[in-house]
Amino acid sequence: MPVKILGSADVDQGAVIGDGSSVWHLAQVREGASLGRDCVIGRGAYIGTGVRMGDSCKVQNYALVYEPAELGDGVFIGPAVVLTNDTYPRAVNPDGSVKSAADWEPVGVVIGDGASIGARSVCVAPVRIGAWALVAAGSVVTKDVPDHALVAGVPARQIGWVGRTGRRLEDDGTGLLTCPDTQEKYRVSDSRLTVQEG
Image 1 (tube, rainbow, N blue to C red):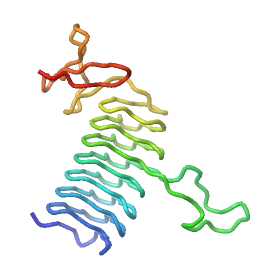
Image 2 (cartoon, one colour):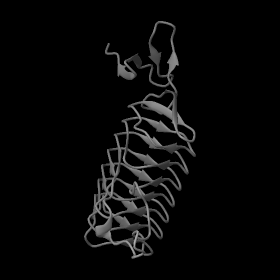
Image 3 (cartoon, one colour):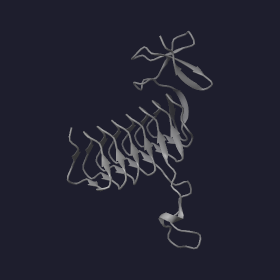
Image 4 (cartoon, rainbow, N blue to C red):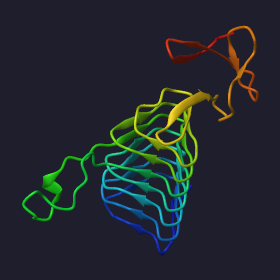
């Protein structure tokens, strides 16, 4: 499928946009950014220099994905989400001179396959969001999030586990957790979730 870039979008010629991807009104994709196949970049979203996105990612309206963020396949970034990149943000150096690109070292947010970041959440780099994890809307993530974890709050804390559909897993009374949509079974061990085969 062809790439769709609306006329009001600002996509640098040095960006790579995968087949079937769409970039909507007023979005900006900077030089060196790489988007996989079938991605959707919503109105007013920002994709920073060198950001890497897998296939089938969705970045909703007005989200800010600063470099050097890395998104796996199937990642959902909700409206007005911010992925930061500066541990010690300052506009000026101690001597009052304006900071340049050489005066700081960007750090990124890494998001695993299938994870979702809810609307208006902030992920404070450096941080890793695990595969299939779910960050509730309005959260502030300051620590790594395990695969399949459900986190919420300011700062975000784990409040449960989710399956691949995003639904909260239910305790089935046998020591296993069950996805209400797929009936997949999971076991928690050492604060990690593993799928039970067969």
